[in-house]
Structure formats: C-alpha cells, structure tokens
Amino acid sequence: MKKIIYFILGVFLLASSFNAVHAAEKVRLASGEYLPYLSENLKHYGFGSHIVTDAFAAAGIEVEYGFFPWKRSLKLAKKGVWDGTILWVYTEEREKYFYYSDPVISGRKVFFHLKSTPFDWNTIDDLKGYRIAVSLGYSYGKLFDEAVKSGKINVWAKPTDKENFQRIIEGKSQIFPMNLEAGIYTIKKIFSSSIARQITYHPRTLDSYSYHLLLPKKKPGSEQMIKQFNKGLKILIEDGRFDQYYKDALDGKYEK
Image (cartoon, rainbow, N blue to C red):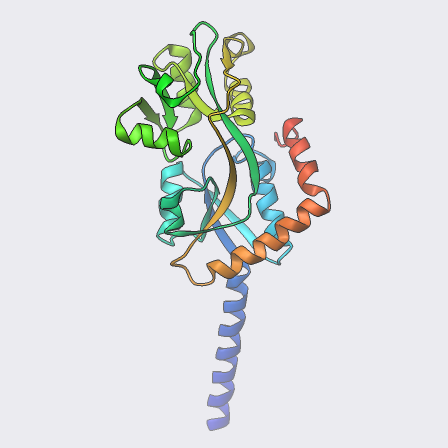
C-alpha cells in the first residue's frame, strides 16, 4: 500500500513539475492597436509583435497577445493579470512598477495637422492656444507631459489614434502628435486618398524615443524573462531579421 501511495505521490510531483516548467515557457502580453507596429488584424499581429514573438522564441518562450485600449493594457500588466505589455516609451512613473527591455523600436513624434491649418512651432510655449489631440495612455515626452500637467497647454484625449485623426479632419482639434511612420500609415489606412491628402505634418521633432517591452516588477520571474528577451532581440538584430521585418512593414506586407 505504501508503495502505491509513494508511486502516486511521485507521479503527482512529476506532473506538477512539468506543468510549472510548461507554464514558464509562455508569456501573455497585453497590447493596444498601433498600426503598423501592433494590431490584432495584421499578420503576426504587426511588425512590433513579430519582433517580440521571435525574440522570445529564441529563448524558447511562446507569446500570447491580448488587445485592449492602451490604458487598460498598462493596468492589466501592472496588476499582474497579464504578464507584461508592449510597446511603451520610458517614463519615471512606469519604471516604479515595470522592468524595461532593451529598445525594440526607435522613432520620433511629430505634429500632424490639416494643410489648411497654419501651424509652426519651436518650443512648447508655442503650442499655447492650440486644440491638441492626444491618445489615452501615451507619453509625448517629458516637456510636453509636464506642460499638460501644469495646464500650460490644452489637450483632448481619445482612446484611439483613429478618433484623433477624425477630430483633425472635423476641425475639432488642430494638431495631433504621433509617431511619424505610424501616423502616415494610419492616415492612408483609414481615409480615402482625397481626405488623406488634406493632412500633413510639421518636420520638427517633438520627441525622439524608443519603444520597450514592460514586465511587472511584482510578478516573480519578470526580471529574468527580460534578460532572456534581450538576448533574443540581439539575435534578431544580428542575423538581419529585424531589418527585414522593418522593410516588410513599410512595404505593407503585414496586411492580411
């Protein structure tokens, strides 16, 4: 009888050990829509997701994605409901709760506006008086964020970039800061060519930044998983896949 009990106990412990290892081989990441980098409706869930998936794959880790409004994605990861979230710029506030990966994608933000709207700027002070559209959950750089917090500039927040571009077209907002490549892509995607031609952007850079994978500090194993991800990301950059995926994104090859 004892032998049978020991056998059953051994099988149970072995199964528990297997399940623990298996669970550690999968990471669940919350994300928002950010064409062409992230989207539930693109191949590989977009260029950015493709990079993240392959970087984790190099470490033997599978990725599951969930798409939510940006603010909710961050909250789900912060609470540990999901294992992490992509792709975010650095802020001191977020660093209190998350480990940051090495840069996944780099870029710059510019102001989009109607060609019929006269707009020029050199400093944040020049933005006073403009109706500025922003997307919920985004950081637009330290100077811009501080100006919003202090009430120096006025912003109207919407959940999606699409809604903000619609506000620009309707004249409800005058300028909208966004990643240059993503902005151009989004305009072409959601508007007819005749409407898209009405929108332009100011060449001055509002903010240069890099996007990162964020894993919550409160969740055990996050720090080690970030290290594994960074190693995988380095492999993608060195073997040329990163550059190829970027080219594919610009060529529209992630469209289903």
